[in-house]
Length: 265
Image (cartoon, rainbow, N blue to C red; front, side, top):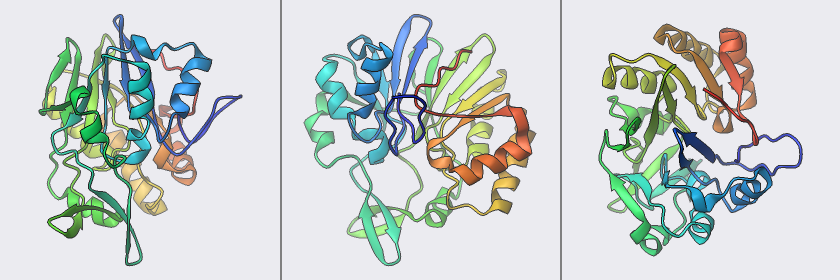
């Protein structure tokens, strides 16, 4: 419902929101950076009041700041956050730290609608949450200039607030991991470890590669290929150059996300 890119008259913004229909259930993954996703929902004929539950992939504004618009239109659906989520995320530029977290006050204002979910929680049959525990993720945080404010200090983000939404389909598992800060290949590997008897059909989301060198992107593409995953649908924080390199390396395995895209598994 929202991505950086769009086709036609639908709005675009730096953010991501995905509406999912799964075996008759309606799910919302993230809410973008504003109410634009809700406006696009109306244009697409999607009834947000019918959403049964939402999932927040991580505690950044470009995925969370549309929560208010969602709760205005939907009066009952809970939203699942990872236990480590807080209003404490910052991006660093030179020596300055800029707040990039959930809109200040939202966690208190909407506390009755928020559920802090433990790792591996199954929300409904076939739909579960997967937190990421690859060691050394704070290295990714530092490389990407992402920090958490703790006890008055800024420390590299280890993404204890990030989770993926896992959908079990007849074709295999679909991983919805909106920014993949911990590394798309790590997330695929973690999913394989968590569900060793399942094939990974597809991964959907941003890969946060706009700070990554071309050589680093090509190396990631090779690691993704080695996992045996099927399709990759990526956009948002991946970046146009990175997408083009992934396309060169992985060919038709990679598809571009954009506002209004419909994916059928």
